[in-house]
Image 1 (cartoon, protein in one colour):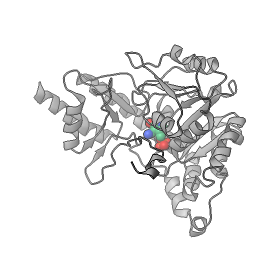
Image 2 (image 1 turned 30 degrees about the vertical axis):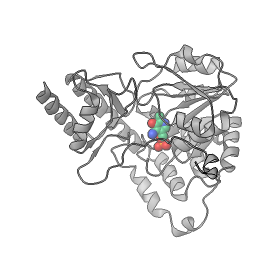
Image 3 (image 1 turned 120 degrees about the horizontal axis):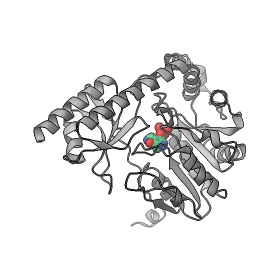
Length: 354
Ligand code: PMP
C-alpha cells in the first residue's frame, strides 16, 4: 500500500440492483413503480425554463417543503427534504448517530445501513429477525446509540405493527429512532401519527416508489422541529443545494395530483394481491407483503437457479447471496401484463422440472 493510500477512507460500497436497458426487458428488481408519474409532473418538467436552470435552486427547498407540510398536515419546520431517502438517511446517520454506542438494525434489512455505518465509522449491532422474518421488539429495548428500522422491512416486505414500533420508540428516549417508510404507502400504517408524542422519532419516506419518481430523487423526513433543525445544519454543512430546480418543480406538482397517485397505488396493490395468489398456487412460500414487492422462496427449486433462468428470459428480479435469504427472490410488482409473463414462465419452468 502506498503512503497516501493509508489515509484513504476505505469503505465497502452498497451494490444497487442492475439497471438493464433495451426493449423487452421486464424489470422487477429495484422496486420501481411500473406506472408513469402523474401528468402534472411531466408538465412541470417541461416548464422548468432556462432561467431556473441558470440560477442556483432555492436552498431551503421551500416549495416542496411547504407542499409536503400541507399534504401531511404538519408545520413546515417539521419537514426535511433530500435527494431520495438514501440522502435523507445518510444525513440522518451523520447527524444523529454520534453517541459511540452501537446503533441497532435488523440482520436482514436494507443493505445500505451497514454501508453508512461503515462510512461514518458508527459502531452497529445487527439484531436477528426471528425465523418468520419478524423484527423482535425486545431486541431494540436496550441501551444503544440509535435505531433504524424499515417498515415494512426490506427485502422481506413484512410490516411491524405500529404499537410494537411505539414500544421501541418509548423505550429509547435517549436516542433517535429512525423509521424508514420507503414502502409505507402500499399498505402499512405510518409512524407519522406518533410524532406529537415522541421527540426522538424521525420518519423517512420517498417519492421513488409510490409516486413513480425514482429518477428525480426526492426523499423527505418528518420529526420534531429540533431534529429537523439539526438535520438542516448538517445538510448546509455539506451541500446547500441538494434539491435541483427540476426536483423541486416535479415534487411539488406530484403532491398536487393526488387522484392519479391514489389510482396508481391502488393498481399496484391490486396486482400484488393477485400475484400473491398465483405464486402460492405455484408452491412459493412468502410472508404477507405490504410493500410493492414479494420476497418468495420455492421449496423445490433454488432461488439462484430461478433468478438465472428468469434473467435469460429478460425478466430481472433481485437475488441476494446472503445467509438466511439466499433461497429467496425479491420480486417487484410490475404491470398486470408483466406479472402475467413472469407467472407463465415460472409455471412452465417449474412444470418441466417436476
Ligand atoms: N429505504 C429502503 C428500505 C429502500 O428499499 C430504498 C430503495 N432502495 C430506500 C430507502 C432508498 O430509496 P430512495 O433513495 O430512492 O428514496
